[in-house]
Structures are given as C-alpha cells and as structure tokens.
Image (cartoon, rainbow, N blue to C red):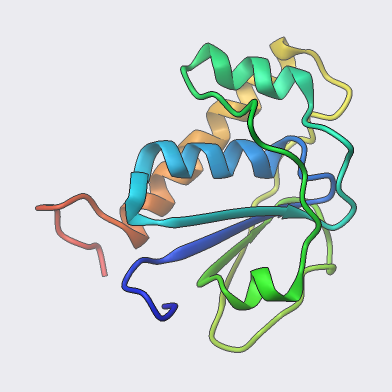
Length: 143
C-alpha cells in the first residue's frame, strides 16, 4: 500500500467523463475516507457526460463538481490499485501495483436510460473492491 494505511485506487478510462468518474464516485460514496480515490483519462474530454451526471444524481451521488483529468505517471505511482476501463495499454505499469481491467460498455453518446445499467454494474464491481481492500470496521477481511 501507499505510505498511509489507507489503500488508494485509480480508475482510468479514455475520456474520464463516464465510467471512471462513476467508479470513483461510487468508491468515495461507499468507502468514505477509508480509501483514497483518483480517476483519470488517457484522452480526457472537456466535460463530464451529462447522462452520467444525471444517472448518478438519480441514486443520490452528486458528481457535478468533478471534471475530466489527464492520466499521469504520478497518479499511477501513488495508487495501490489501478482499474482500467477500455483504455488499452495507455496506463503505465509499475511493479508492486495491482491492475484490474473492467470490461464495461462506454456510456459516450448514450442517454440516461442506457447509462443506468452501466452505473449499476460499476456499483456492483466497486462494492466487491471495497469489501476486498477496505472492509468496514468489525468485518473480517477476506484475505
């Protein structure tokens, strides 16, 4: 893990406007301050996907203060777990880091109806990740 006792996770997709933003928001929402959360994109968009913002708002998660960010080597180095979502080989690889690749439908150009199932699948995956890397107080770690 990083120098703190808190695990850190970086979510990466191409535009950092949809999947990685939803995953980061879910992780922050579900794990609170038990996990350090980052997201980035290999080719960031100018703004978040409005359908993604709306879909997250429907479940009480506000991401209107977020914006797409460029993927940096420093962000990868500072993270214990890097979760890629359709960005290919653009994520730098460092020894000792854990890499996961989540195959998820890209919400780009889709309406909120199409984004909802993607949002829900991301939540399920993030719940599993939280249980693994940052179990709640009093629950046993599945290691």
